[in-house]
Image: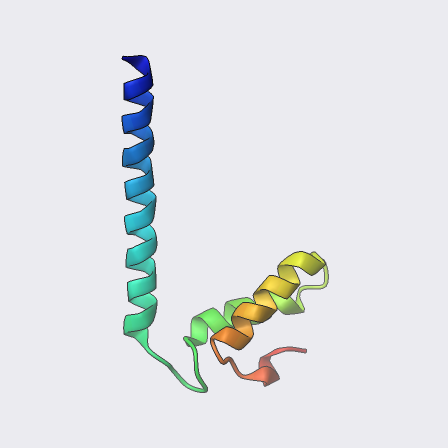
Length: 78
């Protein structure tokens, strides 16, 4: 019985996380492409991560791939 309760809890949690991610991506898609491609605030946040001198190389690479994926303006990167 305890195994079933844990499994049910895991399913509910997975459903909540999945629906939250779907809502978040739907909001991004609804926002559309702003000035220069990509959402302006997303591009600014990614540029801040890339420009921060203490960012680890792994995170910087991932942020850079997102930056190019959103077609952000390259002038934001120092």
